[in-house]
Amino acid sequence: MNYKCTTFIPNILFDEYLSHLSESELKVILVIIRQTIGWYNKVTRKRKYRDRISHSQFREKTGLSSRSITKAIDRLVIRKLIEVTDYRGQVLLLSGDRKGKVSLYYRVKL
Image (cartoon, rainbow, N blue to C red; front, side, top):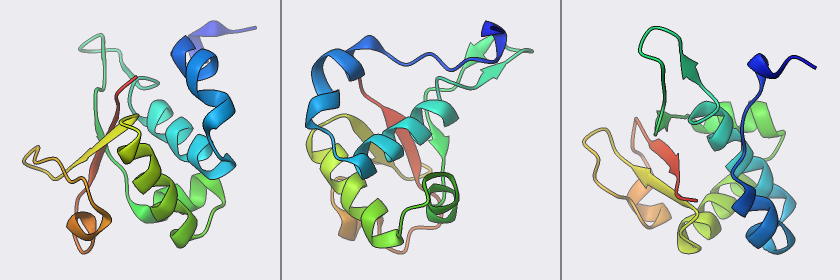
């Protein structure tokens, strides 16, 4: 197996949270993990701590409806497993705060 093309997932996701997450929550958090800590920049030799992810990217990568994605994001934010911010880094806790924003940035808080 080629581990160079591998996304590392924090053990706490399996050990503490897996049994409590819905399928949609798991899919959404896995996309965020892949787009952030699963992304390695060979030039800077660093991983991303946050990434701009559009709703259409979530739909494409998870196969979920927009409504399911929004609900999953809401639950993950409430559980403090992810953080959503605007381009300035302002934390957006509620779905109403995120609605209509052009750029939303996601990060895992595990």
